[in-house]
Image 1 (cartoon, helix red, strand yellow):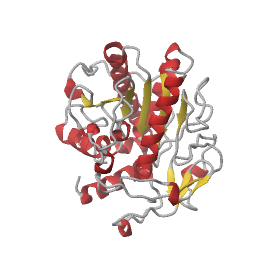
Image 2 (cartoon, rainbow, N blue to C red; image 1 turned 180 degrees about the vertical axis):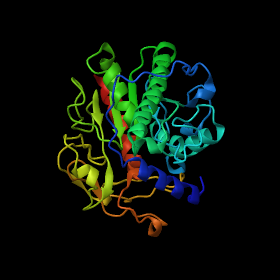
Image 3 (tube, one colour; image 1 turned 30 degrees about the vertical axis):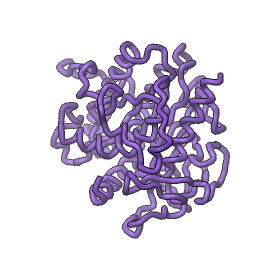
Image 4 (cartoon, helix red, strand yellow; image 1 turned 90 degrees about the horizontal axis):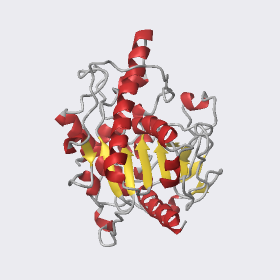
Length: 344
């Protein structure tokens, strides 16, 4: 991916986290004229083990030791990539838009979903994602439209997961991974399909990153507390040290915070030296010591990330880097949890 394109995507994703609409009104119905996407069609999957896609990519320094595991499945939900506030495609992006599909594939699927490709088979559905503006409604009409846009997006996610369970899972353990709008839907998916159900025993872990996950969101599923714990949830949001935006300060409920270097949910500090490598602007380069991770309560803090070109990285909100600043740490942790699950 070209550097300029990735910087533009950074701006997009940084905006995407500034929202308070991670809770849902459950009684919204979908328009009867809209049909569910046919997830038997391979083009409706951004990543799938039965086709070659960017999630299969491996950063060059990691290729020699690459040993994929096909006994575990990863269900990945991508963040918002439909970002034009003019909403030229409507409140929800059509699933068949090729330009948007390419944007998704060579940004989040390449830079985020690929983290999990050694731990298991990756399934990442395309879905009729809500436009970025749905997180920032202005009028009452906007609010109603935004809620329905999220409902439609979740209906696709649910349909894709149901199809996956019926046709591909075949009893395999499952990792749920998501970022930003993906986590908006992912936390709901985990609650509906795993929390207190028989399928909970198949949950290796859920990486629900970039959107707050309340500690009381689930009934039986808890936050992960150690690096090898399974059947639990991990969640974090990344900001520059000393900074908490107003919407974080105004949050009423306590949220899960996992340190992506120590994998503790206590108030821990891990310095840059503990970061073995992030993948930032060049996919084939691991940047060591790129960021620290300090659990500051509700968020993770780090000094300004160190990488070539960071002079242009002036924001205090590191939402775009929630996964990528800790790429190798997350990659190794997923394998550790898989090994622990298999031992159990």
